[in-house]
Amino acid sequence: MVDAHQDVKKVKPVYRNIGLAQLIKYRLPWAGKVSILHRISGAALFLLLPFSLYLFDQRQASDLSFAKFTSFTDHLLVKLVCLGLIWSFLHHFCAGIRYLLLDLEIGVEKIEAKNSAITVLVVSLSLTAVVAAKLFGLF
Image (tube, rainbow, N blue to C red; front, top):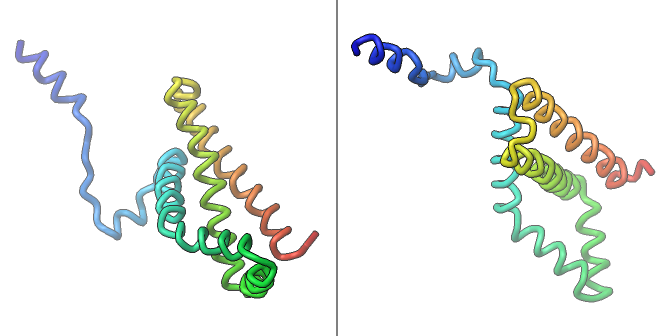
C-alpha cells in the first residue's frame, strides 16, 4: 500500500515559481507561445473595440465623415494601430480554429500540436504581411 502512495506522489505536476531572470531562460513550447498570443490578441481586440467602432462609424456616416476618416487613417501611427488590430484579429481567428480542432481531439499529439502552433503563427503573420502591404500601398 505504501508503494502505491509513493507512485501517486511521483506523478504530481511540478509547479515552478520562477522569477524574471529564470523566466528569460525558460523556453516556452510553441503551443504555449500561441496560447499567450491568443490571450493578448483577444485582450487587444476587446480593449480597442471603441476605436474600431469609431472608425467604422466615421467611415459610414457621410461623405464628409469619410473624407475625415481617410485623412485620419493616412497617419503612420493610425496605420500601425490598425495593423496591430488586423494582426490581433487574424491571429485570434487562426488560433481559435486550432483550439476548436483540439477540442474535437484533432491534433492533440505532441508533434501535431507543435506543428499546428507553428502553422498558426506562420499563417497569421503571412496574412498580416499581405494586409500590411496593401495598407501601406505596396500594391
